[in-house]
Structures are given as structure tokens and as C-alpha cells.
Amino acid sequence: MAYTDYGTLAGWRTYSGIPIADISDSDGNTFLNQSIHQIIREASVLIVEELVTKEAQTGYYFPSYRYFFDADFASNGAIASPDATITVADIIVYEYDSTNLLLVDISNQIASINSLNNYFSLNSGYPTAGRSVYVTYRFGARRLNEMLGTSSIAQEAVYEFTTILALKKLRTIRLKKGISGWTAAGESVTKDENQYNMMLQNHLDRYSSLINRLKPMYIRAMKTFGGKRPDRLMLGGAPLTYGGHLEYQ
Image (cartoon, rainbow, N blue to C red; front, side, top):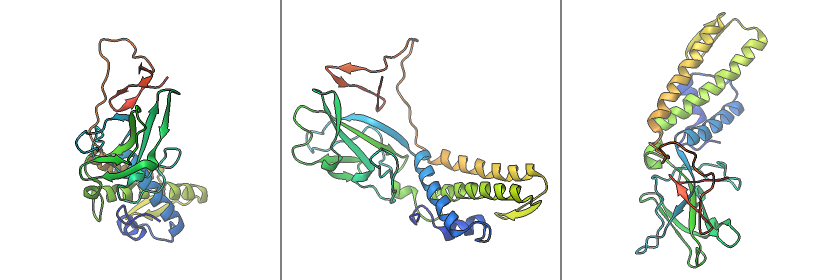
């Protein structure tokens, strides 16, 4: 079931005008959850294994980009169960073992995370002496609590994408059954398949417009004057980062 800060099934039905007779509650909830994951992927930027250093005075780690976004990473790095809050589950922290040239996941040693000031801290004794720290996270243009809620742009984007998924299923049903006339989302389609495609495109255009308003500005460092940058850059056995990303071979 979707979290209410992202949207609700009842709210989507009011927004789209698609009744339960056309899309069941089961399908509606499935599409709503798929849409929430889609908005998280498109309204934020994923930063993979960024090198961070401890602030000497406070002991906090401040990543380069703000603000932390709802990710709730699964063990494989995918989005698991977004909960509309920023917690330690929304970042993955590693320490670099230079002896074995490996990143070691120490996420279970995260002591705290602060979404207001965009930092995290580690438990005493971490990282292991002599090891550097890397963090994987998603960031958005604004703090998460400023982006979510009733009638927010993020919620409308969720409802638009849910509508798109519902309309695609209805189109498939319509084509299989040979239905020549049909009404949904306050719009009617009769005979001409182009009319249906135009209606679907309107929703796609609206969704894209909303995502463009949500997505943060992100500029990656690039090499100039031609040539190819090495696939993996090392210094004393430790990986380097460019624009918050590691370079892999």
C-alpha cells in the first residue's frame, strides 16, 4: 500500500476519474506503488560511492550534494520500501579496504542521519583506522518534507504516472475486446485509436513537465580537449571520484 504522503488510491481515483469498474483496487494499488518508485528514480539523482571525509570539529560526514532523498535501499542497491522519511536506510556507507582493494559495507554502523543539514555520522571505532569512507545516496532539489504532501507536485506526478499505467492496461483490454467506444479520466475515445494515443500522450507530457520541475540540477565533471579518461583511476590503491561517482573498469 502506498504511503499517503506520496498519494492514496482514493486520491488517485478522484484525480483520474477512473472507477473501480475499469481498474480494480488491486491493480490500482499496484500501479500506485510502481509510480512511487518511478517518481523516486526520476525526481532524484543517484550518487554512487562518493568519497566523503569527516568534519574534524563535529565528526559529521557531509556529502557533496543535497538534499538526501527517500531511497530505502535494498541489499542489491535497488529501492525497497520508501517510507516518505529520511532514515539511515536511505544511504549506504562503505569503508575502503586498501589491502584487499575492496569496499566493505558498514551501513550498520551509521549512528545518525540529519536531513535538515544533510550529514551522517558513524559509531565510535568506524571507519577502521586508515580506511576512507564512501557513501551511496539519492539527492533531490529540496528537502523531502518540502516536496511531498497533499496537492504537491510530487503527488500529482505520482497520480499522473498511475493514470498512464492504468490507461495502458485499459488500452490493451479495449483492443482485445474490440471495444469501439470508451470513456475514462474524464475523456472519451471512439473508434479512432489515434484519439486514444493522443489522450495518453497528454498525460505523458504532463508527467514529464512535473518531473522537470522536481528534478535537481546535476552537473558532472568532464574531461576536455579530447582523449579518453581511464576507466579506473587509482592513487595508492584507493579509488578516486569524479563528480561523486567512482570510475570502474
